[in-house]
Length: 310
Image 1 (cartoon, rainbow, N blue to C red):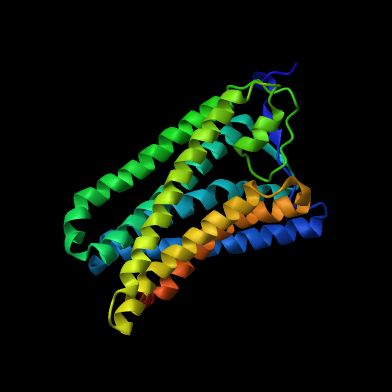
Image 2: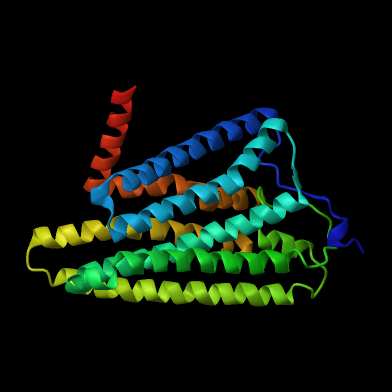
């Protein structure tokens, strides 16, 4: 029986078999990651530099952009390196770091999306209490709680996953390291504790999901009571980007992990995993900036200001 301590590296799933396809995948991943870096970088800079954007909504958006940057920088560089150099290797510690960071950033992202839903709920359903409920200190505490809970859960998950004895070789069926793939390599019955942690995570996610659905039911009821059409449109337009980002995050995650085994195939699994891990961080800045005039104007001022300096 080979123990996990004897494994020095893991073999990731190759994105393609032929050299031409490997180079094509490298170029595609490079394009998507540059778009994500540029988009999220512009949002972070615009919110940090624009004093009129120092509001709870944009503060949480800045945190969301940071989590998006973190998650794409966790998986994509290694996949690009492996495609370019025609290799599948990732070190044992590199794999552990990738799992830790991925759970950390994705956990923080879902927590932040839940908090952003609360922000929309308070601004539309309880506008008179907005400054009281979402003061700068309250926002800082909420963001800190999101990052801290994601860090603790990720630490617990990673430590537990890599304490399992591994007997099924070292080849992973994914182009990055993730918990389900490591569990497939573990010895029989040794993963029950990890399944308990996954169940806890699923319960927390479900709790957040119920809170989001309940909040949006209240939001839509409040919006439909607004007498003027302009007021209704304005209220809906502040919610649409958040709903779009949330839907993209939930749908891609559900398709990846909850699809029936009967429709599973290596190429479909790979396409879905790229969709869930790479596409949302690149699209989120675009979704937010397209619908938000203030943010669009701040990003434009930032870009034109940089060009004028040069």
